[in-house]
Image 1: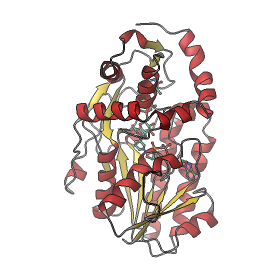
Image 2: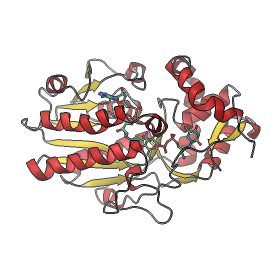
Image 3: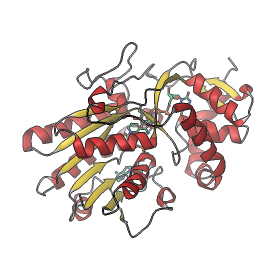
Image 4: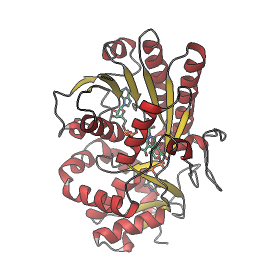
Length: 339
Ligand code: NAD
Ligand code: DAU
């Protein structure tokens, strides 16, 4: 494909995808459509050759803007979303507008065009909390928070456009992603940057919730495989195969930074906090994909990146984020315990 549309390309994973696509497909041009919400950031694309992509600031829920962005595009990779579970618990309207309405607007605009492939980026959270075993693509979809419910709704809408209109839609469900350029509301960059500043690390509940960690480059290569080789109408899990309790990850960050475990504060849990996510990506592996980045090495490199790129996250943490942090964590931290 000569020209593709990447929505949400100024976010964490979207910018990683733009970066790896430009590296791996020298003849491909990318149109990035991004609203630049609080988590969108042009600094994430700063190191890339501007001749290779076109940036359009706009909303995926604006038909005119989407129509313009789609001109001449042969494929779509749809990342744009409200992505943070905690924020969805404080108010879900933006999540419904973007994660459900945005999919509808994008697909209705694409319907009349000759688009070869449309990939909707979804999440392992649609399976809900998985206490035992691992979810496969046919497992029940039982999201348990407004964010994951909105992502599940977006997916189902996508399947309906495949069934009703034969649109070439594929879906990916990725695990918790980590790496450079992640907005520091998410646990890993939050804990790394707090630890660098000798500030408390607010660990929810008993710290024993389990997440499966997937490096952003592996997530992007999984998306690329499904985009180019996946079967229309199908969903594919993308697992990192690195299930760890949050407390394990927290201690690893502190140890890599040479900081004391006394920075860990146990705080009031997230409401409805999913205990464990676990997915099986055998289906994607049959297409030839496998994660490449070793977890220990990936975490080490990620911690190092945030140490070496304070220019990137300090700007964010001194802006909108400050008010969010105060509102979300102040009371929690006042009432926190050390075990
Ligand atoms: P992010 O919050 O870092 O980036 C989201 C991007 O979407 C931002 O650049 C933002 O400006 C843009 N955006 C938001 N609303 C928009 C709108 N209405 N119109 C246009 N642009 C808009 O999120 P992320 O972590 O990079 O996640 C990207 C995608 O991957 C999301 O669909 C998310 O559900 C999915 N996902 C994330 C993870 C993870 O661990 N981060 C794992 C699995 C799936
Ligand atoms: O699983 C994929 C999902 O991973 C994506 O779909 C979401 O977009 C992404 O945000 C992420 O969701 P999580 O809720 O798992 O990520 P978060 O970084 O918010 O939290 C990871 C774990 O860490 C979770 O168990 C909650 C815990 N946590 C998080 C924060 C922000 C804490 O203990 N303290 C915190 O301050």
